Image (cartoon, rainbow, N blue to C red; front, side, top):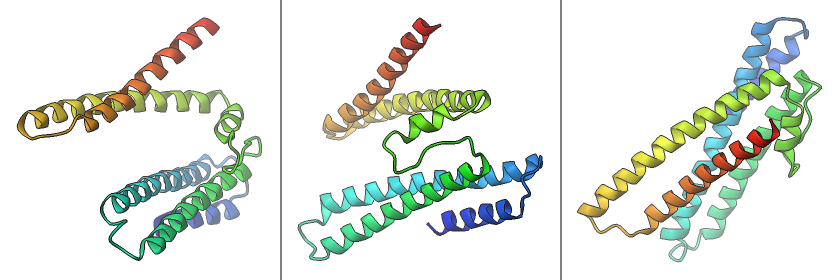
Length: 184
């Protein structure tokens, strides 16, 4: 959480000193810092969800401090949203054509609508890379679960959840390709 704050403050200071000219290096430096803020806050959210799940599974009925731990979870999630909101707001100040607020339920759509062609291409390339890596990871994880189930007594639930996530990803990708193919 602290690294998000340090990165954001660094980006905000660079923005305050930047005169808005054509210094691509300064602009890219600010964008990179804000991208790291968004990445680290997303990872923090995953940690929050993992630890809350672990807490609920293993300690919920044994510990009187449950309310305090849920409060810490909510506080940490609030920090994640705050960090993301600050990064988006600074990006919007740098690029006035950007629209959207992280508090809006249609934020992603509004943000994508305000992206130019180059930014959309970058998002598309990143999504393609994420899809390929996720597909390979799911295959490897399925293989590991299959081997583990031959050696140990592993329930079918982990495999079912993995295949459900992998299936949603595959079907969504295929349906979107079909939809985009019809448009062209």
